Amino acid sequence: MDKNSFIGLVLIGAILIGYSIMTAPSDEEIQAEKLKRDSIESAEADLPVMESQSEDVEENEIIEEVHAVLGDSVAQIQQNEMFGEFSNASSGDVNYVVVETDKLILTFSNYGGRIVSAELKDYKRHDSTSLILFDEAESLFNLNFFTNSNKNIYTDEFYFETSESGKVISGENDYKISYSLYTNDKQKSLTFEYLINGSDFMIELNVVLDGMDEVIDHRGDELGLNWSMDVPSQEQSLENQRRSSTIYYKYEGEDPDYITETSDDKEELLAAINWIAFKQQYFTTALISKNSFDKYNAFIETKTDEEGEMVKNMTASLSIPIEHSAVESFPISMYFGPNHFQTLESYEIGLESLIPLGWGIFGWVNEWLVIPIFNFLDGFDLNYGIIILLMTIFIKMLLFPITYKTYLSSAKMRVLKPEITELGEKHKDDAMKKQQATMALYKKAGVNPLAGCIPMLIQMPILFAMFRFFPASIELRQQSFLWANDLSSYDSILDLPFEIPFYGAHVSLFTLLMALSMVFYTKMNSGQMGMDAGGAAGQMQATQMKIMMYMMPIMMLFFFNSYSSGLSYYYFIANMISMGQMMAIKKWIIDEDKIHAKIQANKAKPQSQKKSKFQKRLEDMAKQKGVPPRKK
Image (cartoon, rainbow, N blue to C red):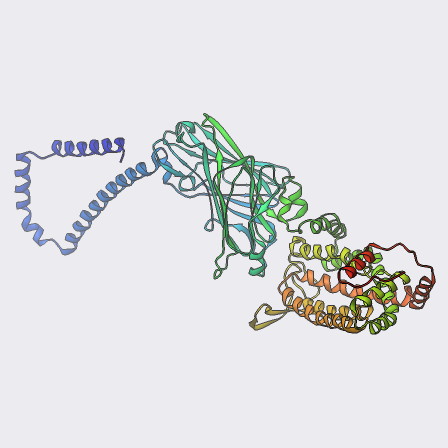
């Protein structure tokens, strides 16, 4: 208790005692009252019981009123003690204001002066109900500071004042709504000024301090900003959402970063921060500072309740730097919207990194090849299943020269297979001589044994890019195709009454088709490759190929069963087109008899005495093992 409170209590006590003395009855009044009571005692005995009870009720009501007055006085004293200069704003009635735009429905509350709910109008949850990014009960947003009287103030414990009652805006129209927290004398205030555009997912928040330099303790140069929300489930698969949801952040002057999605984590922020984003699978809520948040006591944290239905709890503690000026402000932008690449990229602050397109070359392939093709086809207003089909055909045609080179190399290896088998039998007791003889044969025939591997390596970035693109594409969300109700989630044709470990409790048909197509493609590809060249090594390679032919589809079946059906559909279509290309090349493009004749002609030509780097390396290895190099 400080000195002012103590003096106040002493004065109240003195007033009560003085009032009791001044209003005390005289001896004559006491005697007259006694005679009056004696004269009516007999009459009181004859009164009905109901009348006696009525008097008791009146006395109880008086007592209750006295207690209420005393309680209000005590409560006022407690409020003054706890909230100091802001005690008058610590009580009131909660009022809500709804602002509706073309994109959002925002609900504001005077209790805390904050946005307590954000609904996206153009999107729905997987069960077709309203998609609300957060609501009042599961979210927190406040500023925190100490006053000169050492009161610890959290703005979400007070009733702000506003003159607005709600609005519907559209297009490029703007709407401004302000919430002010005043001190008891109404001369100083902390105000949240919101500027909302009718067609944007981004709104502006300006934190204005007016006269607060006389209220806020000068021992600190920042306001604490506390932000937290329980991320609600919006999609069909809770597991996929948890695997895709985390907190992203961007240090000033650096690339965006994030904390791990796969486990709970807490990270201290060690430098000035441009923005913080609570990223869900397909939607994001973000705070962006125009002047950077301070690193003082700044951290981010994610928590997961494995038994609950919420995705994750996300928390950020930041600091707003202040200069203790008479009037100062701190501008913040708030994003409530989808994880759509072009939308996020348009803000030019790095928010597009929220979409996990893959690192390095995989991200480049998605950004400069896959996304432009997808957006181009999307402009024709086609079903997304058709768009995926056309995009797959286009990419396969783009890669056709590489596919042709791979098949041509395989055909050459098949033509040489009898001779390679013969060399294997001839040098079956000397692996080094067999390898040297085989390489000599390749050189004479003009065959590069690595020609089939290099094109496959070139195609790998596209395969991995697609693996990241489809699960991250909000365009596929809730888009149906054939039996799939949602191409962004799994397509269940059968719900199992039990759960299979690592597989799930449903059967995805697109995943089954993808796995079967992998079996046929691998079987066809192994027949085209010249890997079964005979001998122990050839037999080993053939065995490994068979294992891969059956194990890989099984592994993919388990891995992809709960993944995006659009991704499984793409891989299925890609495998079918690849098999069609291989059959077409074999039937109409490549003539193995001509290849054989050309190889024989190459073998008859005089061979250059210049050794390749690969041959030199083989000879050096042979020398190290004591095997004499092949003579020219």
